[in-house]
Length: 333
Image (cartoon, rainbow, N blue to C red; front, side, top):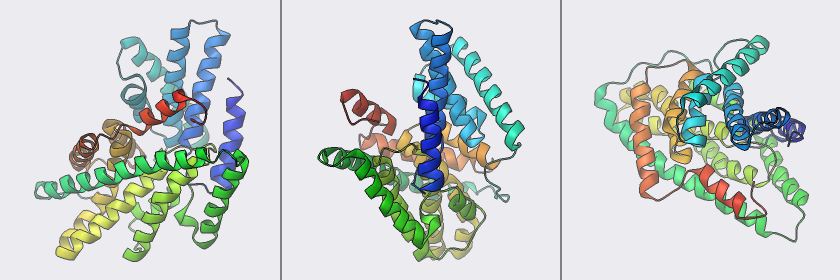
């Protein structure tokens, strides 16, 4: 229903902007856009199929606006939602994404989400490093997906506790962490920008950030406040890339310094590929958010490794799992 729009708008500002929950802004924008698409279809007395098309088409526009990534928004529709390509759908998605992002850029300007210095193209000899990195991130992605589902189950089984109390308790935990170190919580854009800019965090600090955000993301999602999974995964993937660069540096300091910027960038798309299992969307999303194309091949290689490991471990895409939970009965998102 159309009342989703103000609820998600205000709720997203409160939970992410004010509360610092480890959630992504794309969750509310996708949901609001889909609701607007459905309402438009009903207003025009369209059929059920056309209403669904408007919902899915506008959801891609919502993702595109969240990250200023029009091509990734279109790919999101076909790779993750519809999983089929028809000419009529392509035209609808192109029109919706172009209109939405064009209007957004009139207000906010046309610039990538992240300002990234130039990154040298890694040598072909480094490909095995990215393959191994992709496989390790694939295992981490499976763990992240399963932790998200487990924490949802734990919170939902506490039926004696009112929903608002459970959300407040999780918010209290996140708020306590935010008082200690604001970068550890929130959507993660500020942290990702620092990592992409080459900020010299100590390895111990990076590991702490990684562990805390690994748990805080699924925990925040279990609170059922408006917010998505995409943006926190980007920051988490960047942290994994930085850790991998430091590990390479232990064995070869020069190679570690050379590959660390590339590994941070590749980490953004690789964790996304492992959890969502939409590798092309993840790669294009990162390219559009950073305007960096020099690590496209490493992104592809790592993405293959991550998705392969995820498939071998029989881990379904996170949104498929969440959809099953929603259709199974009360308590789903």
